[in-house]
Length: 106
Image 1 (cartoon, helix red, strand yellow):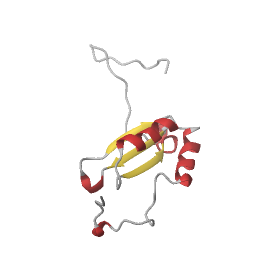
Image 2 (image 1 turned 90 degrees about the vertical axis):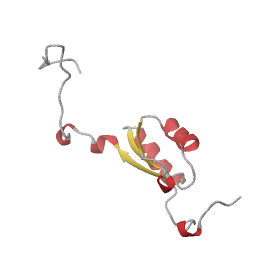
Image 3 (image 1 turned 180 degrees about the vertical axis):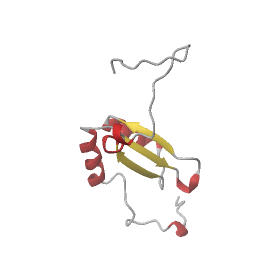
Image 4 (image 1 turned 120 degrees about the horizontal axis):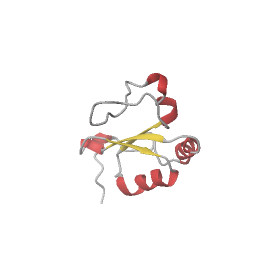
């Protein structure tokens, strides 16, 4: 049963997240850094999911079990984006008295 609407222009021209080339890039990045993934649901079924993966098999498992045809997957290199010099803000969690440590083993 074909559920593809003509207005969505299904074909082979749009990027395919499961192409060997794209998966190879993702696998290579995951050897050195986590990835940030934004999973957009086709026709806006709900808000996008935002996830972080550290293992290639977990990412592929998500594609195989949590996506549907037409969903959009955007992937970013975590270490290239999330650095100490570009954080929106930062801080430490206070104790019951509102005190925070200047030092710590992190």
